Image (tube, rainbow, N blue to C red; front, side, top):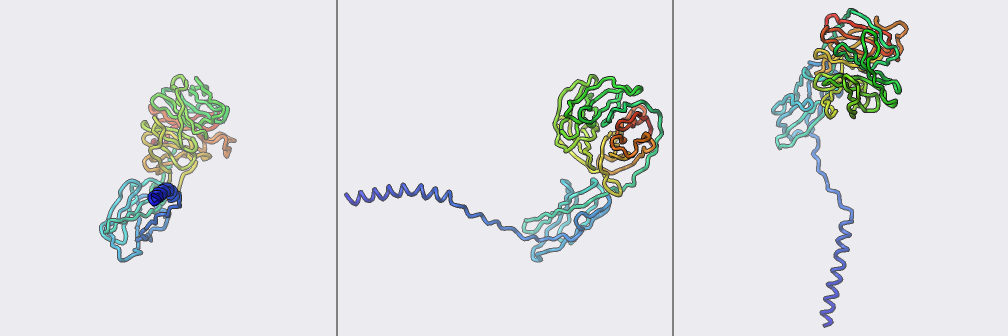
Amino acid sequence: MNSLSGIIKYLILILIIMPVLSCCRKNAPQREQEVITRPTVVKLVSPEPNKVIHCGDSVRIAYTLNQQEIKIDSIAVFDGKRHSLSKAGDPGEIYWHSDESKMGQNTLRVQVFFNDSLNESHNLNLIILSDIIPRNYGYRVINNYPHDDQAYTQGLVFDGGWLYESTGLEGKSTVRIVDISTGKPHKMMPLAPQYFGEGIALFNDQIYQITYKSKVGFVYDKNTLSLIRSFDYQIREGWGLATDGKNLIMSDGSSQLFFIEPEYFTQVDQIRVFDNTGMIDSLNEIEYINGKILANVYGKSFIVIVDPATGKVLGKADFKDLIPKGFENDYGRVLNGIAYNPLTGHLYITGKNWPVLYEIVLDPTI
């Protein structure tokens, strides 16, 4: 009887202790699982990082083996998501052609495959300049019109005989429909004082307007300027706005242009603008004309004509002779504002707080 009682007590003690031990094991620090990594097999030796080339140049990608006993099955190069080329075996070098690349920094992915089914990747950064010397465009002044010298012009669009204009500065920002012949607003909608108005674009008979640092935009009825809705975007700053008929195109004061689908305002593409000597920074007001983008460069007297597919600067037009006297080097009165009349092929050009709007034709036309 005493023996049976002892066994029962022993079993009870075990039942009490086991959960405690289990809990201790759960709370005990777990030994980190050892990660076994394979040493790097390939070392890229050419080209050097951030090598500057011109579009169309060939780039020699050369490498050495750190482990001679491992055999390479093939090597491939990817330009973004695009598979550029592959070579079977161990060629030691491979030549990549840049003729279909966008301008600016490009990151190539060099993928090395081994005969044991493993592979490794290496990133290669290149800076690509345009291979085109920009064409210098002349112009002829067809007419000039009065312009509101209190309008801090940020965006300009022509449609149906009217000029649509966006003006900036907190407490003074507006979107307006302007009578070209008088320079006076036919209709005008002020923005709330906390917003700094920026570029506008006409899309599907609605006016889209962005703001400077608020990351908020507005959509207006084209005829009445009544507010239809607002929208948010992720671009750091809003400067210029245009449309190619499918997407909105936005500048942010850098060398970049962003393509944004107009329903959900998500970015679908972007380009960097370069000529044959380097990056074109401070892109401001923009207009999409005949498959090309025209852009003001903030603080400069010229506009650039850009290929929207690659970012190459195709041409330049300098309007320094149009700058009103006394406005030179005044950053509050810079050239800014491009609109296009598709019926005549003429451009409308003005600037911030300029008293005049010019009607011009580029020679040759774009």
